Amino acid sequence: MPPKRAMEILQRLISEAAFLLGEKFESAKRSEWTSTARAVLERSFPAGSSIRSSFETAQSVAFGVDDTEEQLRMGANGTLSSELAVLRSAVEQLSWGIEEENPMPTTKTSTKSTLEIFVSHSSKDLALAEAVVELVRSALGLTANQIRCSSVDGYKLPAGVNTESQLREEVNASTAVIGLITTNSLNSYYVMFELGARWGSGRFLAPLLAGVKPGALSGPLSLLNALSAENESDVHHLLAAVGEQLHIPLQNAASYLKHVAKVKELARGIPIQPYGEVKSAISEENVALKIELASVNEQLEKRPKLKPFGDVHYYVVEGENIPYCPTCFGTKNQLIPLPAGESFSGGFRRQCPACHTFYYEKPKSNERHQMGGGGRGGGSQSWMG
Image (cartoon, rainbow, N blue to C red; front, side, top):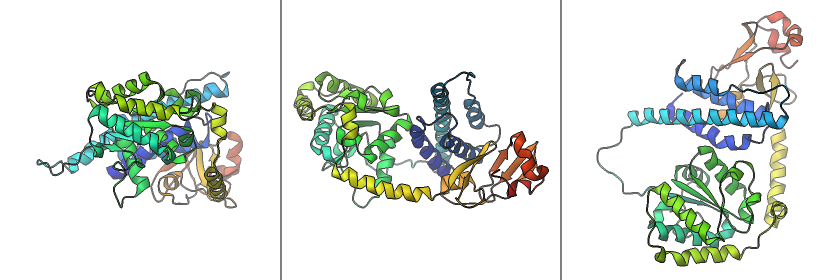
């Protein structure tokens, strides 16, 4: 697999990992994520490489027979954290290969500044977002093209770019991300996706609360130290942390104190809502979005679903008896039917004709008689049991 393509898939998997934390120990989504990651690594690194061996080692899970579902889930999250570390190392190693193939020119060809700060926010919080941008710019002496805040004039995306792909790239490429957490942003799918993707990258992310309490943050974001925009000390702490990430000393405090006051004033103007009220705060726009999502969910019900067979989960189209390759569907959204299974080491295996990934099945003893005694065609007629 070309390094660039492998990096794209691995980076997507790293971003999606945040959404697996709430999944059960043996959920289909966890299995699909792991199978896809393993397939990409197998096609990108030689057998016996430290990356592949580290990934397999990361999957060892120790648990007791009396562990609760929650204990098992936490153990699986620990495994996920180890797997993420391996994937990040894999991306780094793949990038080395690309740099060797495309060495940097010896002369400087561009004066474009590196994007340093990304402010993730809801467009409904425009005034507060603008105040935060002016604050960090003044306190750290940054230029406008070093900050991205998509709703604020002077800090918006360039004309003509694909908004979704550009924001997805910049939220991970920027040195620091400030997540402006308000009632509006908690109800914004895009803001939550941006913050989840950033968390998955393992890079610096600072949640800044305005009008909500820390308990409003759920999932992986609840593990981060959230600061309050209403607290002057917290705002100064935010500036110091961001400056440390950028390796930039703060300007003279007198030059940006008015911006600190502005942020605090706007944040205090937002009534604080308890967690339950935040979750139930649904505007007319959100109602329309829910109707749209219901239509999307109806379409998703008709999409192929993962179903287990032995140690493998294959995609299945309702009403059919054909197993489809999980790697091809997961990475390219292509339905590639798998051939009949062949006997292998006391079980069965199949190989995708498109991506050439092997899937090894070890059926339970009560399934063996359904597979026609272990012949090459035995698994194709009754693979679903």
